[in-house]
Amino acid sequence: MNSEQMVELLKEKLNDYSFHFSFNRKKDTLRIEDPELKKGLRLSLPGIISKWNEKKEKAIDEFVYYITESLSAMKNEGALSGKEKQIYPVIRSTSFPVESNGVPLIFEDHTAETRIYYALDLGNSYRLIDEQMMKKENWTRQQLKEMAAFNLRSLPTKVKEDKVAGNVFYFFNSNDGYDASRILNESILKEYESKVQGDMTVSVPHQDVLIIGDIRNETGYDVLAQLTMSFFTNGRVPITALSFIYENKKLEPIFILAKNRRKLTKGDDDKQ
Image (cartoon, rainbow, N blue to C red; front, side, top):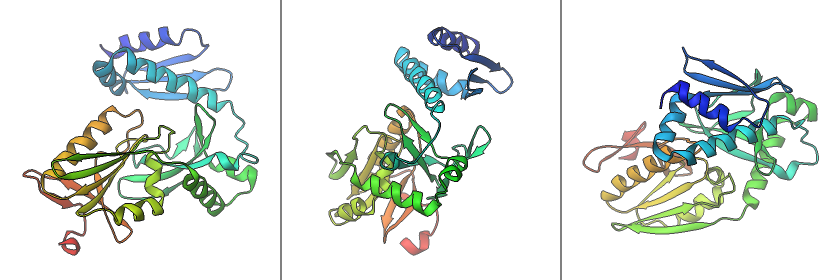
């Protein structure tokens, strides 16, 4: 399938909506705009085609859901007062946009691979919090951070344990949209740090999973690399295929090299 065919397919699937479509052949993108809001989304077509090649109609259904829910969320006035319990931190890659429709989003640096954004949960969708929303409420970043952290700690956790080649992997997969965000919950990291017998790794390949690894032998790193890449390529909101070593309350990105070797992206001498 080429880009023109994908544009026509998306138009067909979204035929019940009065969206405007603008196809940029040079950049290979499609902008879908709500004419009433005069706001919209810009989609990278190669990425969508790649997902379609893997999952066919299921992939298109996921993108249609993402498009309709995102544009629906934009109709929300963005009032935060009274919705304090619906605010959560979300992890995104460092390539994720830092503004929406020209308005800066509220975010913080996290690791070399990730940033922390903040979201207003709207049920079936969410809206990332921007500077305009903060000014309307006269909130500080610290207030927002504390509120989101409290709400995150209040979420229940659902964990599945798997053992592979003598290594243990814990999968957090509650499907509430904030599984990856649990990397920010220090009590969880501290709890698992006391459990692990080998190296403790932490991975957030996409927004709906957090993987904590107890890597007890060299094979474990190969297994970890395969796991994270699989989740990364299949996730609806990919974050990073790299994993992190967790030591002394710090996360250090690692590359999994050939022959089951690992290498830290920085600070190698301090770790060896």
